[in-house]
Image (cartoon, rainbow, N blue to C red; front, side, top):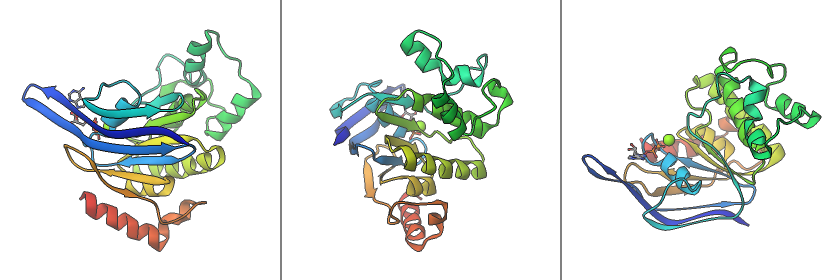
Length: 241
Ligand SMILES: Nc1ncnc2c1ncn2[C@@H]1O[C@H](COP(=O)(O)OP(=O)(O)O)[C@@H](O)[C@H]1O
Ligand SMILES: [Mg+2]
């Protein structure tokens, strides 16, 4: 079943120095319980595409169909510094239900799965960058919509932590299977996590190529050392650099 269908969309912005064409004839599909990545260099229009899917941006031409409800983790979205981690994570539920939610066993389990047990009462500036990213992801996950849009959820982390987060997300996704549109500029992350990768070009961007990772599921962190994985990584690097 198709959850998101983007059909031949165009988007440009008016800038002081003229019209900036950003998306030019972009089409993508997200099926139910697929993990689909949009991969491309910085500034190629990935966030613009996600904002359009989230319905936050009017497109010039084309069509976007959505089947279901969206939860959306914006690029660089941060935690509120005056709320502790639990209060931050529960904020969307609090707003939806208009009451402060209880810390149920189910929530306790989610906190543990997201590596946040024991940090419920910590303030955002008392936890590591990786933890803060996991807390933001948990906040999006708990909104419990059937489509998740994740815009570079691991940006601005050091390379080692970022790899660890990718591996962790693979494990969590293997368990829960959601329909995810994932924006990244990290080739290895995309190949490890995705069912399909849309590779975007420089501006005005279109989909350069659609890649289906050669290493099948179930994947594990060791998959990145397999030959087909390395070959594909090389191929994508050549496309982009
Ligand atoms: N609201 C806007 N007004 C004008 N220009 C924009 C706006 N949003 C994005 N852009 C421009 O569109 C291009 C693509 O941006 P973006 O989608 O954020 O790229 P990415 O997420 O791939 O880094 C950039 O050149 C950016 O400056
Ligand atoms: Mg972006």
